[in-house]
Length: 344
Ligand SMILES: *Cc1c(COP(=O)(O)O)cnc(C)c1O
Image (spheres, rainbow, N blue to C red):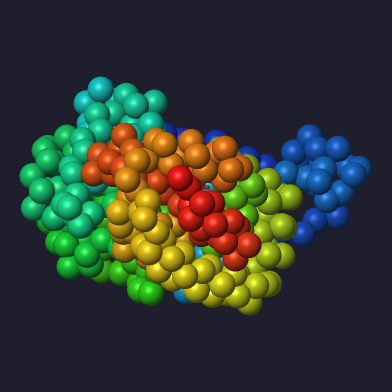
């Protein structure tokens, strides 16, 4: 069993968190004269619920995770940074991640002066628990796993991930930004079994809400308590809380978008593979296709000249020759395919 408290930075363990007016009194009153707010211009004159309970209760029904095991952030970016600030002593502790993977794990490690150790995936972009565990030492507090992984697009092997969760005495974060596009259960189902697990999800991809900046961390109540201690008290503003709450009433729209994007993903994969400029498409469980072409830089520039922007991953480990292509609308995908067909 992981002793979470022993993983926390001593200053965070000792921290007395800011107690805001909304924490000290909860409930209805005739007059709220406790927070130096302007009494006019409701409802935006009032500080929002620091724990966003109403929104979390709604998310809980959709995600089947209790509201108490949830932290909401300004995108997933916020919990990623908080993981370092809670668990990693700057200049002392380190974190381990797979490579290639999402860039923010390393950027936030650098910002927090935490060593970031990268363990290459194999040729099929799969992780091996032994390799990840071998990269850890007594100062490794966190292992980052992204599944489906960005930029490769594939799910990480479940048995290997379980071996990491069971073989590592620190925190394991599984980033599921693309889980809605994958045909597999979320790791949130395993929270009871693994007290060291944090699962990240986001409204930025399948829900079509990247500009709204709302991400979710799911973990034990103990870990969520640590997030709450360290986050800005009012990190999710009322506009965002209300807007996301309204969007959650239209889960059917999200399901329809995902259905369209999955069938477009299949069409894109088939048609891309048939093109002379394409070497191969990598298997994907996400809303993008890592596509190896004969000349990545030239193809990237050609597409930009056609008004089509893809992500050039040519210089990323194991991604030589690859463009990461997001699945767009049927019209956008046809534009891309026509442009590539017409490439000299
Ligand atoms: C897009 C993406 C996110 C989402 O980040 P937000 O801050 O929630 O927008 C998280 N993780 C990965 C791997 C991503 O690709």
